Length: 460
Ligand SMILES: *[C@@H]1O[C@H](CO)[C@@H](O)[C@H](O)[C@H]1NC(C)=O
Ligand SMILES: *[C@@H]1O[C@H](CO)[C@@H](O)[C@H](O)[C@H]1NC(C)=O
Ligand SMILES: *[C@@H]1O[C@H](CO)[C@@H](O)[C@H](O)[C@H]1NC(C)=O
Ligand SMILES: *[C@@H]1O[C@H](CO)[C@@H](O)[C@H](O)[C@H]1NC(C)=O
Ligand SMILES: *[C@@H]1O[C@H](CO)[C@@H](O)[C@H](O)[C@H]1NC(C)=O
Ligand SMILES: *[C@@H]1O[C@H](CO)[C@@H](O)[C@H](O)[C@H]1NC(C)=O
Image (spheres, rainbow, N blue to C red):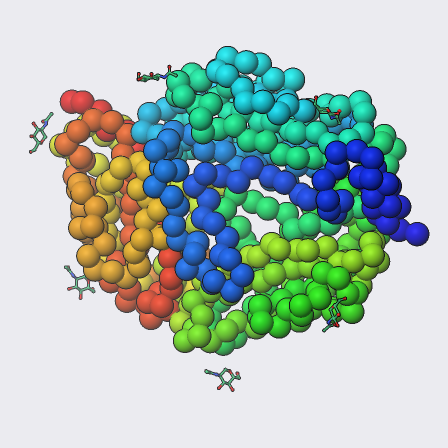
């Protein structure tokens, strides 16, 4: 009998007597960022991902996101862990020492200055910088339900009213020590991180492409090799009973390798059909784990989807790639801290993410508030000629005559004599490669990434 089945039986028994409300199924949990675009409701399509609420921007200083709490059901007296990504969206550096407090089982809200069962200190965070910290806490000694409580900035040193914004609670079920089970789920990366999910990155309309899907084992025992993952690229093809019947292999069925508890494996998925660009702006895939029920009596509801923007056709796409683990892009100024009203040189690494060589063309540069650029690409199309004028402040344009980047390659592009804003402080600098969209494939892309970074302007 699969271990999970034994566990489910055990939990059902426990539920009869204990506070365990309703569904004993595994419920993986993670910290959802306040700025994270909401998942489209069933069938609503990706349009719903463009908005964050105005309220969430009232507190722009610090934001956190985490991957799944692991294991999904920790063993009594053992540890549960996750990785937290903290990002500074404020226009001032956050000094080192911001405290993240975690309680293994707490229900009432916390006040500023309380300390958790474990407390972690964040390093300094410059504007738009992200730091990832691995956190772990010891779960209660007795099985049953517990409320994991995570409080970012628990000393309220970043903001005196942090307690209103950054307390997160998660229901978790503590199982008896020695309970061994497996639980596969799609691994998650911060929503803003451009994972190398799809190849090509912007799959051309009406072709086939490949995706690299991270699969994590949130259980306490290793999975055997050969568990099947069902992949759907057309949501209308998902059968109604996909999570209850063991007979739906998926539009594509993939054999998973053995995965140790707490570990992630990246699994290639070939042969994904890209819709026609006239019908869809995005390619979204949904994955369901254990579709033949090798591990448990029913497939696991793999609500995860990976999204790619569909390009109108093959060709060059001039863009940039995020710095590893960061939401910003490789853009630097010389001097590093330019003086107000002087000029600076901007160096930006531009990448051709398409499949044909293409010119960099005219490069537009503009400075704007630190909070703006992470939302920019949701607001406007990159080929919009009015783009820089939509934002206050400096704009600058340079013609990179004859500069061509080969498909799949990148080049450091240097633009001199860029005017520096007239007030000191931290600014975001946005660079728009090929602002006139000379390359055909760029024109149809929805929400194309606009490379940006933060820089500090100082008084003369
Ligand atoms: C968590 O705390 C509540 C309230 O104090 C308690 O009833 C419950 O048993 C605790 N959970 C575990 C797993 O110890
Ligand atoms: C936080 O600071 C603001 C402005 O300094 C003040 O108005 C507010 O009352 C403070 N809040 C608390 C809970 O101390
Ligand atoms: C999509 O591609 C197929 C085969 O490659 C072709 O037959 C079909 O006409 C194309 N459809 C559109 C709408 O371009
Ligand atoms: C889905 O499951 C329900 C309930 O088990 C069953 O009545 C129905 O026939 C199933 N539908 C299909 C298409 O298998
Ligand atoms: C930019 O370069 C292109 C191609 O060399 C040229 O046709 C165009 O006139 C130039 N534009 C400006 C504003 O210099
Ligand atoms: C920068 O330029 C602005 C506008 O021209 C001017 O008002 C301001 O005084 C200048 N600041 C400095 C420090 O030169």
